[in-house]
Length: 161
Image (cartoon, rainbow, N blue to C red; front, side, top):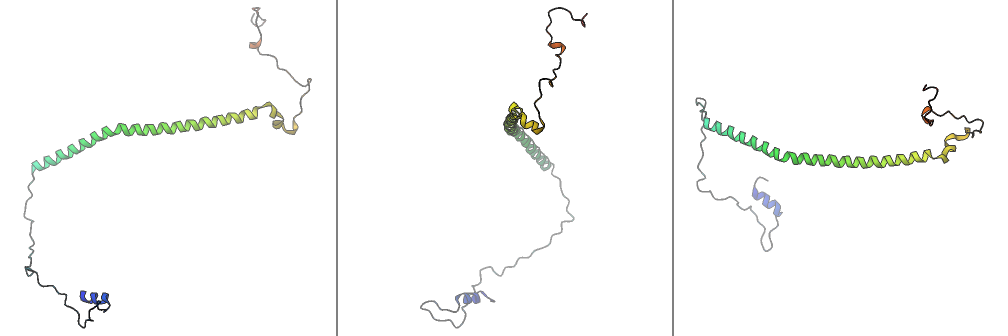
């Protein structure tokens, strides 16, 4: 397909439109010349190696002042937004700690229930297993009471004398 007309003929599949006849020669799709079409542009290379750059101090001062103003504005915005962001982070941390506290409290309650089940005197036989034999009255040894357990009537003991 070397031209647009060949593409149109191919798309039409050489079938004439209704009421038309089959073409024997391809149509001419060339456009007429546009006015001013013969004008050509000439581009000349310019050598700028001998030019000296002039420094504009006013432009330099303006750019420094704009940069400083942008820095100050960004610091002011950061100072205004910073506390609210810190407050949001602190609230999130507090909520996390509340959830953890609730979880730990429920875990502590579960552990207390398990401890109470295990310390129940009805379960002594489970703890002891088959080797536990209830001691007789002769086999029980009672320890003497400590010094703090004695009631004092104001009479000094032998040790206090």
